[in-house]
Length: 120
Image (spheres, rainbow, N blue to C red):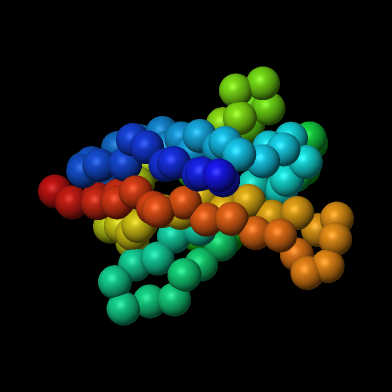
């Protein structure tokens, strides 16, 4: 059974930091591109950060570039999202996503999400 479990969301003040983690199981973690998405109330889900299966290439949304850093540990089947200088607009549910483009259709898995609230 495939599982993606996000952890370490929470309440933080503006300017603060959080480090999200996503523990994966039930599939070959190291073969999948991993993504972090977020969805704020009343808004569409947006891609925040992505990292390729080997961790060589990373991409970020312009809104988080320079503040967020995504990493992965293939030995621990875990991805992380270090979030610094958080602001009110970062408030959202953050979702972990795994994608494999090796076949058709694309294979994709989602976590249940973790709430991040930035508030003073």
